[in-house]
Length: 514
Ligand code: ATP
Image (tube, rainbow, N blue to C red):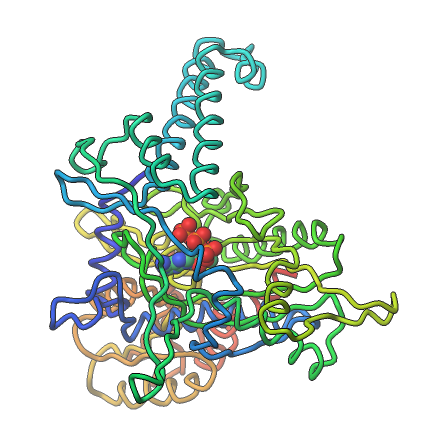
């Protein structure tokens, strides 16, 4: 698994320097794992949201939106299982004083065993050349079999320890696997303790009346408790979906990877309600659809892969992640889960209200099954930013940093640049900008040399620059410069709207998914 610590560092520095992401309340030295989106960041974030929202709600007649409140009745979280089971096992290293999730340490150890198997495969492939049979090697090589046995045993022990809440068994696993602190190499660990990830606060003005309530740790429950409201008022027929974008809060134990793991973040979730027994068909349908959504952005198909869950959550009968090749390696970007009827059933039990659907075709009522697609908006932002960040040689002397952001997602679509700040060029530039601004986000700049202005636009991922010069005043043509190829061509002002509109259009991108 490729790790590129420098890339992550550079992306973080670049995101700050160019107004994408700032540490929260930075003048007070920031707040752990909380970030603010700057002037360019908010545009990129809004464009990612638009791409997701339009895909879900415009392209699917049977999916509608919802915007539920962050605060919910506290019983919601009892019913969902979060009060009792939304815990992470926490472990501290006594020497380095660093805190870790014990389950993640174990999962990393399993991933290392998998890497060792791959190394054996690579070595053997070199040795045997064309006659190498990968499947046979994996089934028969004694070393591979030994690693596999250890992986299976570890997975079983991990699952058992987690499901029975046995933190002593978790600690034993860390010891038996000889896991060392990845930073210091020390094996001097504390016991493992469970830690609930929900933030709580109090609602009500008088202390005695105040009720403990939670900041939602996921947006999904807002959808479940509104399932019947939407179904009835929207006259929705199964199968149908409810989509929502909103903030979620988790008091993460380890939050060291920039916006990959935050304590306040945004989710884009869609719950799709289906007839019981049909869930596997829809699970596979949504796996394929979501991957297509990702691939259509053009950020490299090899950067995505499915990862099937071996240890299923208590509510799921199938689950996988779409992993992305982040600077830290392949990690979860999106989860796709077949949640059975767990949530609706549980809300029925705790609320005493029926949450059933009357199926007019079968003439019977049932609690629907649910397929969930859940993607972190901030993780998607990091995927876009890290995969588009390139340091390139322009020529023998010059380098540039360019963000090759997919054009429909770019914060600014076109920069309008008068070559000089005189002779009527700024006025002409403003006229052109006023024509374009209703259809796309434009930016005007008349300071510095044109080369420096191009570099600044490259650094924030602006796909096009339009330069107005003296010839423009004579024949109404401009230079259109493209970000990735850096090619420049002379085009009539009259054609700009159409050319730029087509190349940066969100709707054209969405058409490609179909
Ligand atoms: P992880 O295993 O990385 O903690 P998870 O399996 O708990 O993630 P889900 O509960 O399935 O995550 O949440 C759905 C999506 O929300 C994830 O795929 C991820 O993109 C995003 N997400 C979850 N936790 C965070 C976080 N702390 N910061 C940013 N995004 C998050």
